[in-house]
Amino acid sequence: MKTCLSLGTFRWCGWLAALAVAAPIAQAAAPSSRARVEKSSFGRTPDGVEIELYTLTNARGAIAKVITYGATLTELWVPDRSGNLGDVILGFDRLDGYLGEHPYFGSTVGRVANRIAKGRFTLDGRSYQLACNDGPNHLHGGPQGFHRKVWKAEPAARRGAASVRLVYTSPDGEEGYPGNLTATVTYTLTDRNELRIDYEATTDKATPINLTNHSYFNLAGEGDILAHQMMIAADRFTPVDDTLIPTGKLQPVQGTPMDFTRPMAIGSRIDQLTNNPRGYDHNYVLNSGGGRLARALRVSDPHSGRVMEVRTTEPGIQFYSGNFLDGTIRGKYGRVYPKHAAFCVEADHFPDSANQPAFPPTILRPGKTYRQTTIHRFSVQK
Ligand code: BGC
Image 1: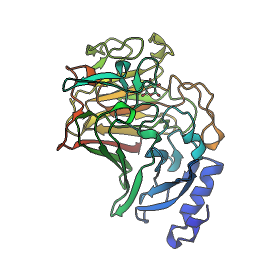
Image 2 (image 1 turned 90 degrees about the vertical axis):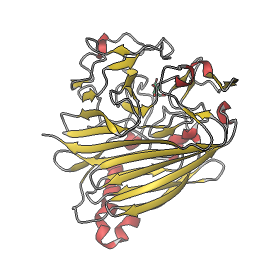
Image 3 (image 1 turned 180 degrees about the horizontal axis):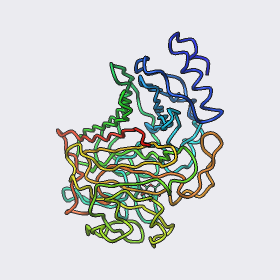
Image 4 (image 1 turned 45 degrees about the horizontal axis):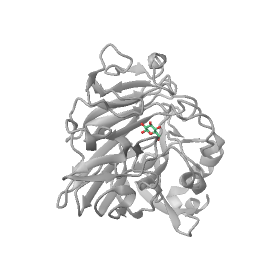
């Protein structure tokens, strides 16, 4: 805790870190400091590999913490309307939590995020069978997906932004996927209170790819997210079967509880949904169509005043309202996470794209570079 205290003008930072363990709230820094990155240890895996923790701090005192295990975002501290910093994502205090079973808290998910029906797809006339880890289906890259890998990190600080770039090479055949694929994820915290996530990948054989971040947000920092006001720039969604595989249709949201084209409390119509466990767990078809950085959603918390706006290059957003959280996980600050303790907004391609020729394609070929950018901008409202 005290390491940071010795850094002269950055004395407040050590104090903040100390506070963060006791009570997840702190006052934002004076706007005179500069964006910076600090590296420390987050512990060791059972086979002795050191996991690094990178703390990105911007000039306004917002903080993002990223570990090399799963290229995971572990903390995100942004101000409320009174200037108090709060950690707005779920996660664990220690590495043990991330090494155990958990529903992808803050993880980078890949090679293919979301579901692939029965873990099967055919590419260039050849069939592939992936590892299945969600009933009959493959979910979020499989049981040993990118969230379970140790990434190599390179920090960088420049004027107006602090960032860390993480790299992982997934070998040919890993979890059943073809090709050696090198993926990079760069987290950048800008002085505009934006968390920008840039992804890139290249391969030596054609493979499906669909990377995203699986952070669980709660803009109040605690309680449930049912009063958060959500707006999603999507007139349609992809309806699913009872194993959450899209039927292939694009269905209008208008007149249904799926409609967030205008701001609505997440909880206002959740009881009208009939899935089990009840709640949002659907891919929205963004009106932008993907391919360029465009507005995807805005969510605000009436209590803290915090607002998060998301822009992405992706054609879809999986909006998941934490339906499978059930109070059995104890996370940071000793808190347990009940149903709807947080929501995820996973910017990516549609589920099961590898088997749905009408969906935007997810195949990466040798010589091409996969790219995706998603920006989460934090601000406050009265
Ligand atoms: C999925 C949920 C799943 C959760 C955690 C979300 O992306 O849509 O169905 O329970 O991830 O695995």
